[in-house]
Image (cartoon, rainbow, N blue to C red; front, side, top):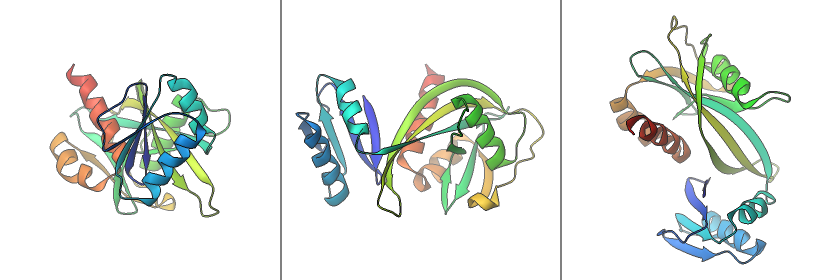
Length: 203
């Protein structure tokens, strides 16, 4: 299944029908256009489009957008704290667009080092990919696919925000701070990937 966030509302594309606020059975490309319209222009907060051929649904869905790939990381220190950045008043994880010729891993490490001022970040493992939709000023619809990696940092803390990218703060947060400070002031897909990471660590 694919979870895509549309203005912080959840669109779930899946094989089986899921118990969400609204469900639509996939029939054609038009089903996806209707689903997006409902999320963008009505009070519906979560919607499930379901159909047997999930690969076809996802392929058709991607045709609605220009796709941008990005990469980022959940960076942990030796205390188990996680690194966050603050941009435009919201807590976020360090990430950025992939450059031509870069692997996802190279892009994730570069973006973290650029946005947080750290060096010698150690890449551990791929976690998952999150998806969200936004509209450019020219009206073009973008599907942003962000590939997330678990990372460690055990060196000297040289963190500083990349001001030119609109980042105003870099901070290490423990689990309690993440739940009480970060989650109430972050994006749904950031909360999703952090919780998913925690779940893999408690299994």
